[in-house]
Image (cartoon, rainbow, N blue to C red; front, side, top):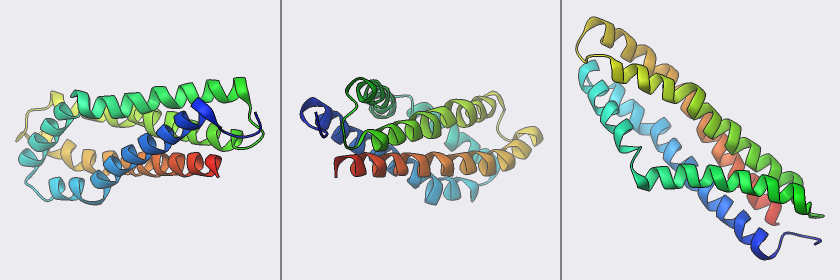
Length: 161
């Protein structure tokens, strides 16, 4: 077991793909989706974002996001059990970046903001004020998720080289 091979290799390649795809989704939100929603009147932007948040819970994205999170956890455990001569540190760094910087930030920062947004009635002064705060804070935390997921993919690639 000198290097990453066999099923461990396949898991690591899947880790590259999963974290890379998640990074791409987050990058799209950071670079143009949130800017487009912020350009709308607050009630329209809120309504659109709430619809996006509901759509994100469908099987397509949840399979990618949660599947990648589980895969990163499996890679962590497998790495500690196997401890290959090459790539172990990179796999662990990639897994930690996704588990904490993507999944953890989602759970601790983005989801609570989404839940608060869902409780407000679009078009009210309270909702309009929250929307302006929401866009800035949500997007800032999304930048963290984007960088963490992209860095996770990079570390998985480095583990394979």
